[in-house]
Length: 373
Image (cartoon, rainbow, N blue to C red; front, side, top):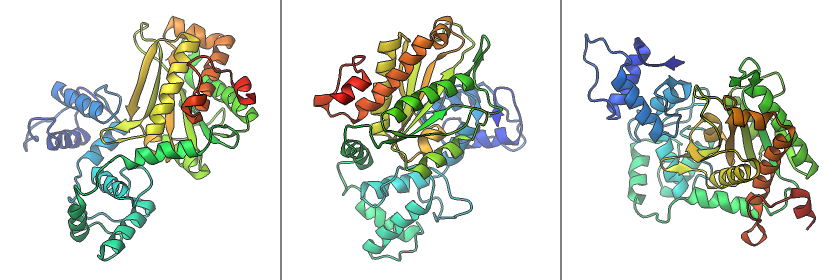
């Protein structure tokens, strides 16, 4: 799906209707009008994307359309119940999950999908609240949740649990379980520039990193092979099925402007939900890459992209330069710089698990020597 400026059709009508409900467009379209993707719609889409941690380009792609469809629901608009074949998705589900997290019944992330873990948490809450434990969020359950509103303080318990899990895992990389995700693949080659292909470069960097991690006693998996390209949903499901500790997704960018350059790291985060450990890992990898390689620092950013949102463990996406930048392209072509890129990511992963007293200044860690110490 790709909806953009100038287009017409039923999908545009639906997008404009949701934007109007959210207060981002002045009013819903009237019967008999000819709604289209005009400049006001593009501006509203950009504002929505920015608030949701999506790429703010004013184009309604599959990610933005999913977020729009979810945003139209508020908790209480409908009865929530688990449907194994077609799970309910929406902001109302995410709001319910956040409440269950804060009162200690749900341990996973608020992803806005009413799955088995949400149903089980809801049943536990209902049972201990003395109401029918049917796993259905209807009026009686909402009334009981409202009674607890304001009584639970301290907040962001999921973030505290996530960082505690990292600390409890211990400082050594031995025994850690990490999924490496080379972006794109198969028919989806990703960005291209001067004969270079993102999918090919991401695969090479991922396999280099895999080799270094495996040599250090880490159990690693790749989400794809050299010639296939699963969807982001499938990649997230794969990582969850392996019970991984971390996910590191590797990409290279491109831009119509040859002046665009630099490296950026992304973690799950937008609004009331974020990954504390993911943000920490993104920051460590970003600082190591900038210090060791000379890439321009494009900083770290919270996003709600599918892979970051659906993984149950901390996940980061690393955009390693621009194929359309002469300087970045030269670094990516240089075998020495590719090794520096891998070393930087490895150092960032190791530093995530180190206590403050054992950590190293950015750019100073040499992995084999630090492990022997």
